[in-house]
Amino acid sequence: MSSVQSLREHREKLQDARFSGVRTFTDSNGESVTYRSQSEIERAIAAIDSEIFNLQRGRNALIRLQSSKGL
Image (cartoon, rainbow, N blue to C red):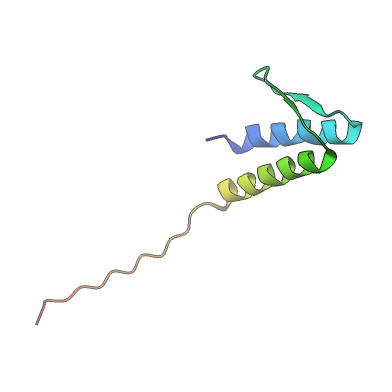
């Protein structure tokens, strides 16, 4: 699982590539990805935004316990 900070950095690099018109992106690990279109880059950014939102949202769970003596 990625941290929020690393996802934000990856998102910034994708945004830079999108605005400069570059279709090949190399991440910090040295892996290259070539996108076919701007819309594919936008979908990748949207997926990262969704992941960041899910990580920041946290987990709110409601647990309701009910017990009885069995009478």
